[in-house]
Length: 381
Image (cartoon, rainbow, N blue to C red; front, top):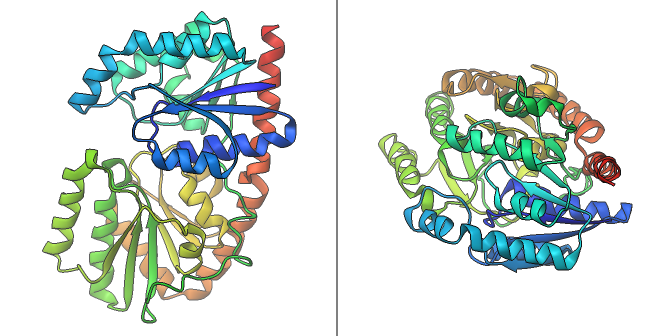
């Protein structure tokens, strides 16, 4: 079976990582995935694709964006890009097309014109109302099946609508527990932590990640314990430069420049997690956070805001902790409790890895995609 997986975003992040790692894992099922991605802003994505030897083609493709220049290009070339996609599909004769993201419309339209069944992957719970309506309309008319990465995504897009009649499957974002294995991963040796307790988050610098609440939590903790270092690993995009400046202003106003370190787009995430004591996710909107699953796989005690599928895999006090969104005080309370009860950190971390291996491993997700692809393909014959 040949699948074409389209990503209009291009900038490398969790969804892009999911696309290529699943594609790589599906090779064992005799499924070949060809990834289509934009020529612009996709350097890192292209590198990661080549590392895993995935079939791919960069194509003239524009993401939907609020940035005026990009939005203008998106509108100007909308139909031309659909034609390019249709022409590519027509020549390649794929068995299925997979559209990755609620606002990625062009691939689904082109696949319909080429008479190829489409699977639409939905992976968010916060979208512009107009975009959400368009997405629902197009899924209703164009999609043969739907994958949602969390039950909350199903509730957000599908529940109570005509889309509930479409074949769908919940497949969470995954973690490769063989790569994220605390028994195999070395600690970082290029950063000097000076014996401090390390509290880490892995998140792109954008408003949905709630970095300000991580900083507010850090402010409260440093009043109680000066021997803590806070690490933030994640890409700082130009499109979120104003937000980054706000975060920096918050750090400077609280005189925490030496206590909070921005690592940028960090390549050694398993070793970073190995070197950390506690992992915190402060997102205000998330569906299936890969960073949380990776921390769990690395036997880290995770404190996460109540977003997406987090409660499906984290039980309070057993495999981690879940707190309300935007609640830096509750984040502080939990972390402060853990710092005073280090044995709890270890026991929770071990239970977290067990859950990650049993429910979130990439092999499980790949099996689900394989079964769903074949189900949709048989229905469309």
